[in-house]
Image (tube, rainbow over all chains, first blue to last red; front, side, top):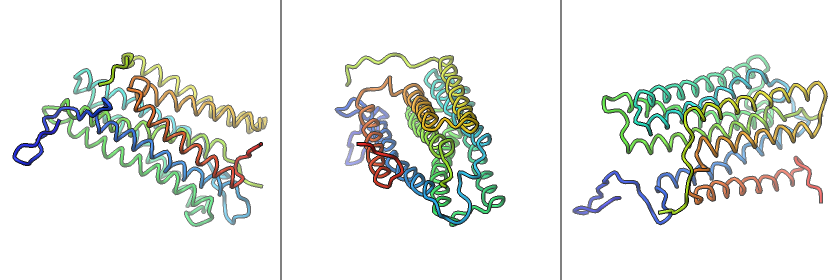
Amino acid sequence: MTDLVHGEAVDHGHPEHESTGVDNRKLGMWVFLSSEFLFFGALISNYLIYSNRGGFEGVYPAEIYDIPFTSVSSFVLLMSSLTMVLAHNALSRGDQNGTKTWLFATASLGAVFLGGQVFEFTEFIVEFDMALTTNPAASAFYVLTGFHGIHVAIGVIMLLSLWGLARRKEGLSEKAGLNLELVGLYWHFVDIIWIVIFTVVYLLSTVPS
Amino acid sequence: MSAEHHPAHPTPSQYWKIAVLLAVLTAVEVAMFYINEATDLGSLNALILIALAVLKFVIVVGYYMHLRYETSILSRFFTAGFILALSLYAVVLGAMGVIAIRG
C-alpha cells in the first residue's frame, strides 16, 4: 500500500493489490508478456513468409542450420528454466544460499545460450557468407533470432543484478521475492518463445524449390 | 481478494521430474527431424512437431510459470494475448499463401 504523507508517497512494502486480487506489478508483467506474443508473432510470420519464397540470391537459412548444435542450445535454455524455478523455490523457503546458486546457474546457462548464438551467427556469416542483407530470408532469420537473443541478454542482466543483491550480507528481502518472481516469469517466457522458434524456424523449415 | 482455491506449487523434486520430461520431449523432437529426413513423413511430421512444441509450451507455462496455480485473471490475460496473436498471424500467413486455408 502507498500512503501520502505531507504530499509524498510512502511505500510500506505491502503488495499493491487492487480489486483484481493480484499485485499490480505481477498483473503488469503478465499483460506485458501477453503483448510480447504479438511482437514475436510478427517476426516469426515475417520469417515464414520470406523463407518460403523462392528466387532470392544467396544461401537460405534452412540450407545451413546445424540442428545438433541448436538442439544443445535449446536444451541449455530449457534447463535454465529449471534452475530459475529452483531459485524461486529456494527463496520461498528462506534458503539464501540456494537462491544465490540457482540464480547464478540460470544466468550462466543464459550466457552459454547467447555464446552459442554468437557462434552460430559468426559461422553463418564467415563460413556460408549469409549476412543480414544477403536476402530477405536471411534478414528475417537474423532479426527474429537476434531479437530473441536481446531478450535473453536483458534477462541475464536482470538475473545477475538479483544475484548481486542476493550476495549481500542480508540476502534477498521478502520484497525482492516479488522481483525474483517477475524476472522468473520473463525468463520462462523467453524460454517458451524459443520452444516455438526451435520448432517452427529450425525443425520445420524447408528450402523453397 | 480472490476466493479461488489454488493447489500447492510443485516441490523441487517435481520440478526436476518436469525438466526430465521436457528434455525427453526435446529429444523426441530432434529424433523426429532425422526420421523425417530419412523417410519424409510430410505433414505428419509437422503435426507431431507442433504437438510436441505445444505440449512443452503448456508444461512450462503451467508448472514453471505457475499459471495453473494462479488466479484466473492472469490466465485470461495471457491466453487472450496468445489467441489474439495466433489468430492475427494465421490470417496474415493464410493471406500470404504460407499456410493453406481450405473452405
